[in-house]
Length: 155
Image (cartoon, rainbow, N blue to C red; front, top):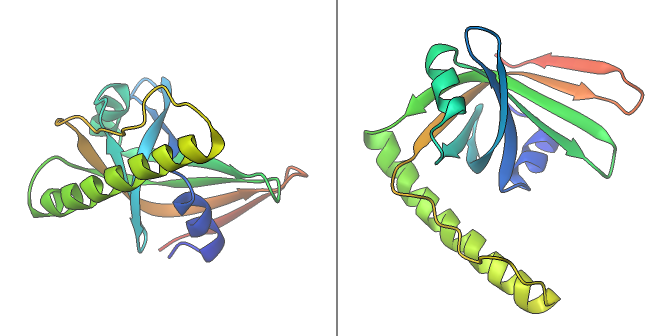
């Protein structure tokens, strides 16, 4: 199970950077929309359906990375991906995605009004065609500001 600190840091984001590689070890890093965390699974939305998707079809390994600016600790979450394109789980996730789109769009409008901060667009709209990456977390790596690594295997 994800520890509380890592879970809270991930949940505080709307997008998270993911890294993949193809069978020729060519890397690819791209932001993906974070939908939810459920147990040892992180659900991401890929609405580009490009290189990340193609890489994961042939090599299901993924690495997520993020940083806690208050502690200067970096994190890497590694795991395996199941690509969900249809079925009962897809239908359930679709409803959750629609609710999250409304919530995020609302937050952007409120932020724009209260801060006088204009966004190029306020509405978050996921295209009709998208896939879900269901990431089974296998390992969490904590990177301290002094360069030490702490690895935790997740069973």
